Image (cartoon, helix red, strand yellow):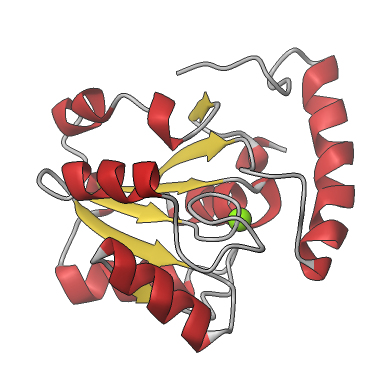
Length: 173
Ligand SMILES: [Mg+2]
């Protein structure tokens, strides 16, 4: 169960204390794309998201790691945000984390994953031993494959809520 527990839980990427992350010597922020930066039916991220990313890019290496296989969708979003991306990341496997770590030469304790799914982003990040931040999904709309993950996620959250570890809407850091 522990691998599903995020270190930090916030409502959205706007609520994360980036100054605090910098103080903790985090240097690389890996963002999930779908429902973290971009809604399922959007093609490019909203202006306020672009503004936020452009601001935090001054302090962190920002990379999108997405399980999405659509090159066009990822390229469009990453170009708009001016960041690198890794597609077909196969989270929760360590593949994308390993690629990012090797490519940019970071230590694990300098890296952080931010995403909306326990089964992929958080489990993957915890397994790889980087800082994990869960955010609520941008929208209720989901990809089909995510629907399956959400079913299992719902059961995990139920168990974690019972133990008073993680409850939807009760944010912590
Ligand atoms: Mg997502």
